[in-house]
Length: 265
Image (cartoon, rainbow, N blue to C red):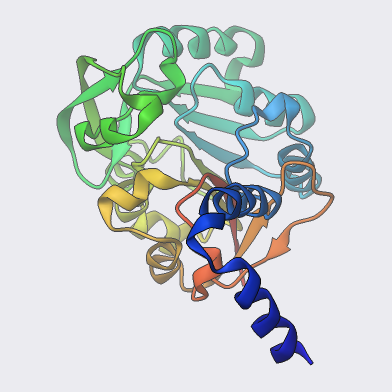
């Protein structure tokens, strides 16, 4: 019966005249499957659900990579006794982030550097109107909404492995969560964190996966190969729970924005 229905649908819908309609429907169904949903934390029920779950675990240390102005860090700090170590390379965003140190005193530590797979200096491309989209890869300006990222500044980049090695008193016992939102630089950050992940075995690793990675030939399966001791889950914008996914399946590798959590097995 299933095969008959598919043959019937193929007969009516696989026609070039219906391509505009089919394209619209494809985009809608991709969106309904939790892709291409750009929602800031304060508007995302799904991400709040996940962070509430993290905070209930009584975390000791969370790492916020690509912290922007500190909305994510502040959410954790307000709902737990955890320390948060945050990284933000964009100077203007970092100034707002750094202001949180006054309120949270010895629980919050902010660093004006980017993280990647090695120690180096690199250009950070940005658009003054959308500083949260700043990125380290000029190739990404092929993406429509990044075409205006024509300005750049030189930034210091460190691997997380090397940073922890130099700051043992700050990160020396347990890491509960690593969050990575670096506008297409997530894979490099993970590559530079392999030793730390192996040593501290953080329970949660949250990252943004989107069309940036198309230009870098990295799919969700590429991330799962690094995180072989982790199970992948997707956060839906209005979700009440994490949804388990298999990175080996093509339908979970669309190059559209999605919020992914890897949880240690």
